[in-house]
Length: 471
Image 1 (tube, rainbow, N blue to C red):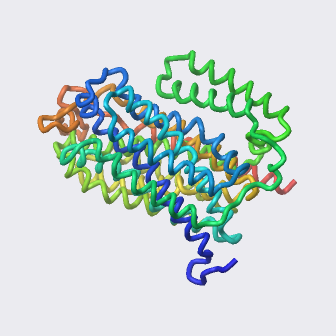
Image 2 (image 1 turned 90 degrees about the vertical axis):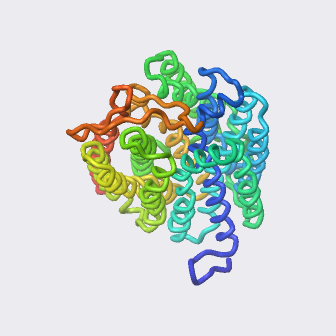
Image 3 (image 1 turned 120 degrees about the horizontal axis):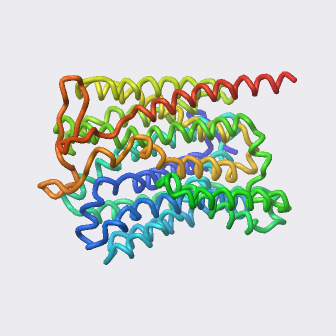
């Protein structure tokens, strides 16, 4: 393998890094870009109020629920092949979204797009892990995730600007050439797969039960009062565990749950991801509805926290595998304190400073959830591990909005200019930010508590890991 002395990657490794960075950018961009323009989409397509949220939810549920299957398909049939298939599926469905004649057509195309995203992410992570020499995968993955992380925060800003200046359909047209670029890069890297899996077919029973359980879990986390979804998740989860114990080549090797560093980093990453979603929702909304900023002003100001969030990926890539769990605990503790400060300070400048600190800590934590887990599992089953981790992070992301009390106190709808800015609010003398309708805007208090509790649990598990290693 020819290795570049500059960054430790072969040409195939650099192509794999580019494929992951561009593909993940597409997936993250479409995860967030439509949130601020849903009222415009609904008005343009004359859709129902109940069906409109499915433009986002259908995409996220499909992506999160299918990632374990996608990761195993990559190990079985080739990581490069699955990234290529995912990029084609993503690009074609994005074009279909751009020309959607009705809301129901758009939702269906978004579900297909989520399936494409499910293939890109775990397969791309595993492709890069196996394309890198030992010891270089973490940094390469961190750099790729840092570039992709820009889309997480820029997505809502780009969506709002494009909806105002052109059309919401431009968001999808923008991702078509990006998906083509991801395909072009993937085809120039070396193929890799799990050689031990060649003689076994896909575990269909595990795939069906895992996907069903994750769909039910995602729906329950969005509507925690709907206990039927929780019961469905538990039942299908039990059937999945039973199927995996009996399968000669399981979709997910259950020994993965006995890998304490992997479980710790994945669970902590889920906490960090939910808190990140809460931060992305609350801060721009507070700037707009609480301080009277326009969507453009809020978007430009939030580029500083966005940059801090994106830097987290490369920083996480430099953390040694043995230090990943302690660093994760520090990141969650720091994020919890910064989120709490963001909810307590008065003034837009102080709010942006606190949110920048929280974004920096959450960016490193989110990066560690992916780079760290890839470093503590066998390279042969890297797709399986990344599929499970990304699925957990995606499915639990909606919990962040639930913890903020989204929708309880703030309203959003089309502004006078046709953009979904919502009604303006005011800042009280005590620093409390209120919406114009009298309700208090969503809060970061519970996400802050979640991060702090998560940090304590990570410390406990880290001590347990050390104790087990000494036995």
